[in-house]
Image (cartoon, rainbow, N blue to C red):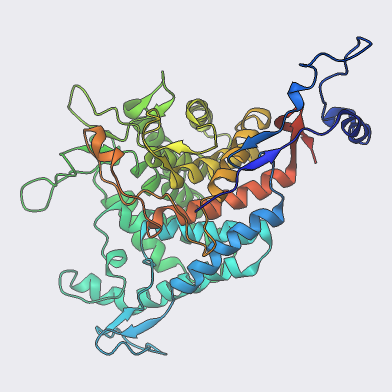
Length: 475
């Protein structure tokens, strides 16, 4: 999408003084002090006031401006992800489904309603509804959750009785084989339930929650992993036996923590904390402040490729865990400290215009939208919750949001999203991953990011101080 650079001209000194006089002393935005010398000014006297051309707006968006971006995304998604059932053979709509009809399928749209990406999107719609007060966002999630609950009630008995042969419109959810099939969706169900949704989530949470906590493969120390037994005497190779994907820190751990709140059982909180710390022990590079994408248990060396979106899933997992983890839990401080260490690392690598690179520490890799949106959300949420200093991270989150917002085109599609990405041991794989507006991974994060930016900028004032954008106090 073609963009017009944002030009900022520093206000004249007199206007700055007049504005400053109307502000409380603690929030006063200052210009450079006037020169004390008398007589004609030197030619360098006003260089600090030269017009600056920024790639993206160098300011805080107000709530209406953020919502305008989110509304474009909503309009596109609402139109292209129907919550409807049709006949597979005829394509005709099925107005009422009373039994498990094997011919019934979800009406296809641009995105799947039961993918892990759409679990994030459901959470993003809930957050956008809460931040904007616009019920359309909330209803988007509730309508689709209700459809999934109805289909679960009709089809789960048959799938449970004959997993190999039963037909169902949402079979990957009813018979999950990986965290991707269950974890993020379960997170969205529990978030909606906590927010007051009247959908009956019991059966769905039992299916996805039990898969995440009891059936997904783990290493001997309990860490969630891939590449376990294949049920035929061998092992799945994803890509190798006993492989940790950083993505799984998000695909499973927020759900585990939310189950602690839902069931009132500390063992879930303990497990969530253990996952964060055991993933971090293996995969976090403390010198850089960022994570590697993949780790293979038993190898002496590991592919130190710092893929951006996986780092996003990691920091998002930590803010979600801290959201429900009791503050008196013995692991609370350790998770918060890990979040802060990661945020410091990410701050180090933010590009000048606000986004982050596909491989975070390789600035010749392309700038990627979905990861940047996740960082925006997680950092703004951490500022709002007090995990991170607003003075340091508020400007960083606003800079990131303005860049992410610029990736939403007039149709509401989001540009610059890396497509689905496995794990690899070489940089070429990550450098050359395609981008597409049909990559579902960016839509939920943009909704979450916008919602949290609205909350942050509603709570704190950010503006110019001697031309620099920074925190100016509580509102």
